[in-house]
Length: 234
Image 1 (cartoon, rainbow, N blue to C red):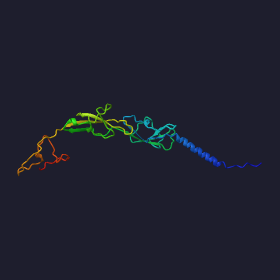
Image 2: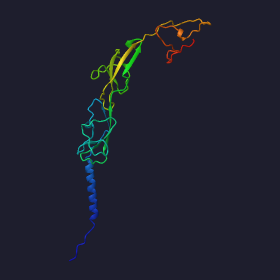
Image 3: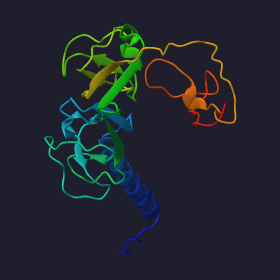
Image 4: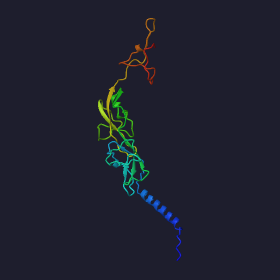
């Protein structure tokens, strides 16, 4: 009886099937990895701001967050987020390979001086619009939290604390507040003769100090000059 010949024609087919099976398996596994549509996620400092607040799409095998692209220790959902840090999404297996990255920004109170003074000849002209704080859509209040924002034309009250917050430009949430103690000063406009005449002599050479106006004043060469004149000769 003749022995059967062993055919190797089926080997390439088996290899192809194996490779296809392997590739499809990887595709199936990767298809369950989470995806991130917003890689820059921002919050306000008054929110909870936990790992659980990060947003990723669960594609079937859960979402787990890490503090690096290669970390093997998942973060607790109760871990507080840190401004300026990046976080990485994987699934429950932790084997997605390239993890989706999210950069976190946490907006706090606007910046500004905690003491601000407004000095005018008429205190009723000092308004909320004169206060300075740097931020996005800054609003001023009379309370540290809650309350309604003040109109920019609201007259300031001397020796009063005002509070400013800002809006997150991405989500619109509002931040904690900057406190500012406000002092409103009253300085009347000096009065005096518009034309003042002097007689020059060998004994008297008038200077700026000889000009007369009410109050204690500096003298300037023009309406808009920023530098006061020294007590030089007229």
